[in-house]
Amino acid sequence: MTPVKTPQSAARVAPPPGWLARTLQDHSRALNSSLSELLRKPVATLLTAFVIGLTLALPAGLDTVLRNLDVVGDSLQGSLRASLFLKDSVDADRAQELSHSLGKRPGVASARYISREQALDEFRQHSGFGEALDLLKDNPLPAVIVVTPDRHAPQAQTDALFKELGKLPEVEQAQLDEKWLQRLYAILTLVQRAVLVIASALGLAVVIVIANTIRLDIERHREEIAVMKLIGAADAFIRRPFLYTGLGYGLVGAVLACAMVVGAGALLSQPAHELAGLYEAETSLRGLAPQAILGVFGAGLVLGWLGAFWTVSRHLKHIEPA
Image 1 (cartoon, rainbow, N blue to C red):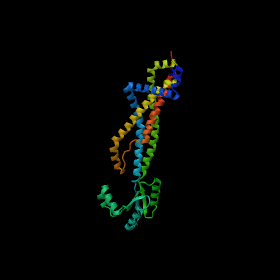
Image 2 (image 1 turned 180 degrees about the vertical axis):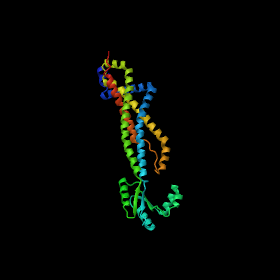
Image 3 (image 1 turned 120 degrees about the horizontal axis):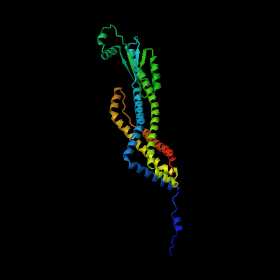
Image 4 (image 1 turned 180 degrees about the horizontal axis):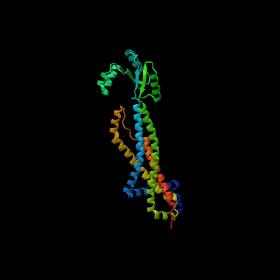
């Protein structure tokens, strides 16, 4: 005969779910509840996420601009040229020989000799003082060797090279127009620190926006929360759906922020390429770096969780069952 299963034996066959299963079920219910809450009011959800996305997009966009300016600076670093003004006692043959030897030196991309006559012709063409120059008896311009450094050489090596070239016995004066590039790097350093300050302030703004939105959700569910407290629900259980809601706002805001930065980059790519071409910098506008994308999503999720946790923990203390 087949034995009849008693309630005790059935209970032994199907044990109650363990701690992990219960935890997963609780989180699943909380996630479904928060998604339902977000989808119940799509317009308000998108507006809040748009504000968050705009707030996250500003520091991300500034970081992208800084990275592109840094690349342009590195590109322009290789286009620097040092003008070595030769002494009048140096003849053309010696100047040609010196230019040829300088072009073979390590760290030098090219060296071009410009005679006094060529320098005068170029000045006459570009200055607009051709008639005035005809009144001069002698050519006042010296011969020049234009030295272009290797763009891949380190900055310290380039500086040492130009200092060494300026001490050559044939050189009367060496001129390197790099002050503007030094100013560019100084400005970039200043803007990088400003971006950190702006990002911190905007991060606080994201927390406040999410906290205010979650506060309104708490007020709408005040009676439900009071009933849950009455039957003994823990604060962690009550808090969990609101935390998922904050994470949802942060996630959607991060997606919108990345989309804004990518869209802005696409609109500015062609003008930026044309502007870089005017400065002889062969570079194209770069979009969001992978680490920047991860940073935007990480910041959105963390700030969303912080905003929700802060406001829920603060308001749950003031909701008690009647």
